[in-house]
Length: 165
Image (cartoon, rainbow, N blue to C red; front, side, top):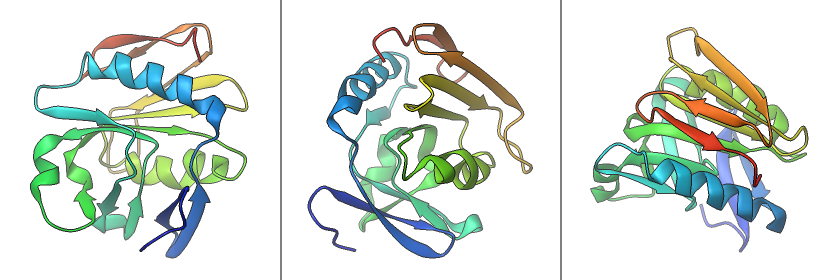
């Protein structure tokens, strides 16, 4: 789907949802998180904020995460949708219009497949790490306020400094 400049589209609950890209004030937080994760990403994986849509066939969904770490080989395919099985981490930066989907819909879908899901709650000024996916969702959750360090488990096993968020 071609979207207007500055917007992205996702399939959420069977509907195409078009939302604007992040606001300017998100840039520093996104860049800081991307750079910290990039240093600890598994070999052969890329850390990006590019607008790429990942398909989740079992859930009949497709999402374009704000930040992702994925196996670079997934981008050798033709087409516009990458395989969600390539993901090792997804981060969503909440906004007033996306908070519900980030905390509910995406948490449920990511929690069955993606090893690590970070919700960077820009309104509450907190970051939550979900990990250890299962058929029933994530088994682990840890939340810290901006300014505190957050441990991100395997396959990263690193500490994220949120002081610049």
